[in-house]
Length: 110
Image (cartoon, rainbow, N blue to C red):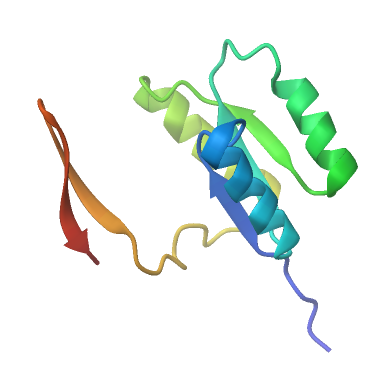
């Protein structure tokens, strides 16, 4: 019988509001949930401990989204620590956005 590999979901901005609700729903659906937080977030560890008391498997990684190298390092760490070598290849439908000076504009689904 093949070993079942847990599904991993990465939610950026998952430590509050809608992002946190998405994290909780994904955990309830059986995903191992990974989220990112800003490097200056002083409550990240507290949030992580609270989530893991509710459902085991949450992880959180510091990531400065304004710094490309920080994003690449975070993505590599998430992939290596989650045991997934094909992360990102299971994408289904997501909206493509074009960011202009006056804000984002949806281009459609792909």
